[in-house]
Length: 135
Image 1 (cartoon, one colour):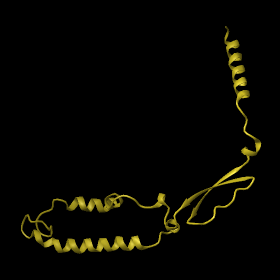
Image 2: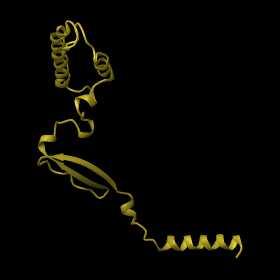
Image 3: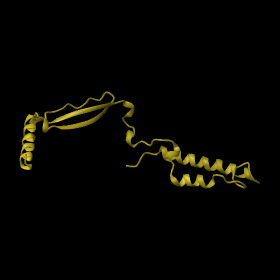
Image 4: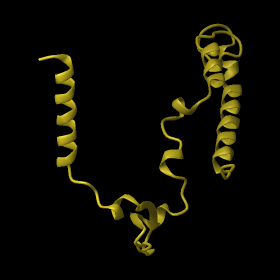
């Protein structure tokens, strides 16, 4: 068989397979699909001839919450900035005055300072968490 006859046979087979597949009706090809989230007992809008409406029902408690995709997740360590992590790494293993460690002279002197700084950090994080997100 020559290359030309192989190409013609393959083209003919493609035409036959296309003819065997069922065609979608014209009305199904023009319909739009709308995906809507409804909360609690809210009614789902009715579908029309030109539009199919698909409703996802969520509990009433989710109505005014930030969408799950946009919520912060993970532990504090995963959400913490690199600047705060670097500060923690710099102070790791320090001994002596203002280090809050039992090693070296005056190691106990930094403990009060650490507690105060930690309280300020926690308060700042709490205030940032209580504010509404910017839009």
